[in-house]
Structure formats: structure tokens, C-alpha cells
Amino acid sequence: MMQMTTYTSYVEYISKQVRCLASQLSDEAEELVKVANEIEQGQRSYFNIFRSKAALKEAEKPSPYWKQRLSNRALVSQNGVMSRTKHLIQKLCEAPTNSVKLRRGEELCHHLLQFPEARSVAIKNGGEGKLCRIIQLTRDEEVVLVLRKCLLLLGHSHPTRGNGIRILSIDGGGLRGLVALEALKRMEEKTGKRTYELFDLICGVSVGSILAILLGALKKSTEEAERILKGVGREVFQPWSWKSTGSVLWNHSLYNTKVWDQLLQRELGDVNLIDTAADPFVPKVALVSAVVNMGKLKSFVFRNYMPPHRAQSRYMGSCSVRLWEACRASAAAPGYFEEFTLGDLIHQDGGILMNNPCGIALHEARLLWPNSPLECVVSLGTGKSQSHDNTLPSPSPTSIKRKLLLVLDSAADTEGVHVMLQDLIPGHIYFRLNPYLRELVDLDETSEEKFLQMQEDTIMYLRRNDHLLERAAAILLREKSVSTRLHDWLLLQRLILTKT
Image (cartoon, rainbow, N blue to C red; front, side, top):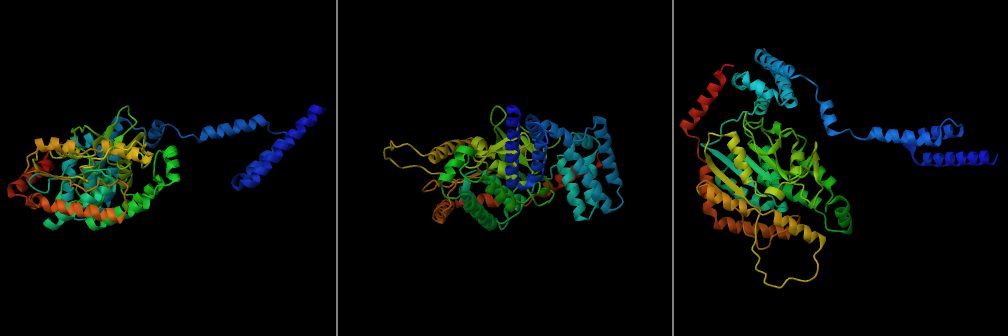
């Protein structure tokens, strides 16, 4: 009898607790009330409740990435992929109207993105030449843009703007990217052209990747890029506080990463990288990040193009991510922002491996245009300084923030790459602009006084090195020679007339 009384009071206690919880959780109130009634009626045991909760929790766990990848991609045999590829190209060639061409072109783009192995099948069946011929005969701009995207996915590279390859490389450095932006302003003044009109390939890392997207892929002016860079910097780099210390301990980031993500989405949008290159005036763009979950650090290149068929890049890469995601991965500075996960890879700031991406830019350019010479390589730094402080070091311990800054600054050295390239590339082709600053400004500096100081130092440096700007501008303004134009035309005609 005593045991029965104890059991009854225990059931009443459990029922009361569940009802109390139900009153606090409005979304789950009905379910919890139902559970309470079942407990009172003896229809559900105490252990079954926890067993059902455990099963629900297990069901909510995300499935492994390889299972998601298989579920998102239809299981199609190799013969099926080959047949589908040939069928899509044939139907595109036979399309009677522009609307049908547009639909067939979109289907081919989707197919090539879903099955990368279809690229070799399309090329072996003369896909490049057939697409080029359709583009020549089509006047509908929307159709041409879709077909150009198909060509990019096949690894087709359009001819360079001049007599050789013109490359722009932009270092990382946080808001010191304003230094590189000032040099580009002067370059645009001397040439009378926008940055995207001057170069065949723009490669950037960290803040350099953001500038590459703004000035190259989105074709914005240097003034607009400066406004965006300063505005985003002031919004995301809030003053240091105890909350920042807690964020470092829990999230390994000084600043609010969610705010950073939202700002990048707002300014860059949700456009895919590969979609930007369908515009014939947009240069090739490469953004460098560092993958940190593969045993050892490896550079990763986000591209708005595909390497040519049978050309193997030394670097992993992708062209099917959105602009803001590529910039977020490339600018995920450790200690400042949380690392960024894309698929099964974890990305951090590319500057921890290669803060001067000029070497990667040269490698990518050689893949795209293997038979073209280098015509102009402009490498822009974000400032350097020489310390003349002879005072003795202080014995007091450094702060957490200062430790992070010292680690990042030591890893973000850019002059080693410059010294090597200076010895390998002739001086009339390679131009390195990296101003000396009176004070090396922190990556997260947002004061207008520091901005003006950097601007003054950069302007003085550019005045002293005006001869470099003049020589680079003269090369970038050279018109393509008649022989080069004829050579490009003959290559295109040979591609179109090539039989499968």
C-alpha cells in the first residue's frame, strides 16, 4: 500500500512538472500536456519518455557530408552521363529559336555543374567549337551570356586584352587595403580606364579578395570600393570590450562573425562566382584561402573560371560558390573571425599561408593562357614599416589581442615572395608597389585619423615612384597588335571547324 501511494505521488509530481514546463513553452504546450495526461493514465512509462526523446534527438542529427552529397546528386552511370551530355549539345545546336537555345543552354550549364566529368565528354565531341559558333551567330544577349557560362565550365579561355597576360595581385592586410586602393586610384587616373578594363586576371587574398570582387567581378569604381570598405570596417570592428574577451574564449574570434557574414551578403550579394565571368568585360578573378582541416595547411583558390581541359592546377579550387562565401573564406582571419566551413572543408584567411598571392596568380595565368607571354604584372601591397624604436622592451606581459596581432603579422609577411619574383621576372614587366608607412596600422583600425595618415604616406610614396606608375600605365594602354588579333582569330576558327 505504501509503495502504491509513493508511486501515485511520484506520478503526480512528474505530471505537475510537465504541466509547469508546458505553460512556459508555448510551441510544445499541446504535446507536453498530452504526455502529462498519458503519465497520469499509466499509458507511458517514465523510461519510454526519455527513450522517445533520445530517438528524436538522434533523428535531428545531421547526416554525414558524403551521404548528403550522394542524396543531392542523382546516381547516374558513366554511360548515362555521356549520353546525356551528347544529347544536350546536339539539342542546343538544333534549337530553332532563341528561347529554346536559352533553355537548352541553362540545362547544359546545370548538367556540367552537377557532373564535372561531363566536361571531357563535351570537349571530345567538339562542344567548345559548337558553342563558339552558336555565339557568333546569335544576337540575343541573354542567350550569349548563358552560352559563355557553358564555355567557362568547359575550361575555355578567351584571348587576353593585349599582346600578353596582364595580372593584378593584391595582398591581404585588413583595412590597410585602403593603401592598395589608393594606388589603383592613381593607376586609373593615368590610364583613364577602370580596373576591370586593364587586367586579364585579378588575384587577391583577405581584403585583397574583397577588392578583387568589388573592382573586378562587380566592376565598381575605386571610390565606391573605398566607401564600402570603410563602412563595413566601422560596422564590424567594434571597440574592444569584455564581451570580446568572452568571444575569443568561446568562438576564437574578437568580433561578431554573424554581423560580418550579413555585411558581406549585403554588399556582395548572392551571385555565384562563375556567373560573373559570363560578362565579356569582367576579368578572371581568383581568391585565395587556406584549408585547415586536411592534415596540413593548403591553399585553396576560388575562381570565376575553370582551368582548361587537361590542365591540372596545383591548388584545390571551386567556381560554384557565392561571392560573399568566397570572400568570407578568404578573409576569415584567425582570432578576428570564426573559421568558415564550406562542404567538408574548413577555411581560414589565405594570408596565413600566402599573404602575397602573386605567385598563385602567375600559376593560374599560365594555366589559362599557356602560349601567351607575360606583358604586365602589378603587385600591390598594403603597407610596410621599419621600426626605429631603440627603447628597451617592457617586462610587462602582453595582452591577448597583442599576442594575436604579433602572430598574424609574422605569418603575413609579403616581401619574401616579392624578392623571389623580382629576380625571376624582368623589371619592365613586374611592378611592385608597397608603401612605407610611418606607423604600421592594425588590421582592424577604424579611426579617420589613421586613414588620413595612411593616405598621406601612400600619396608621398606614389609621388616618389611615379615613374613605375607611368611605365605600368603605358603597358596597360597598349593596343593589341594586328598580328596578335589575327592569331586569336585563326585559333577561334580552327576551334570552330574542328571535327569530332
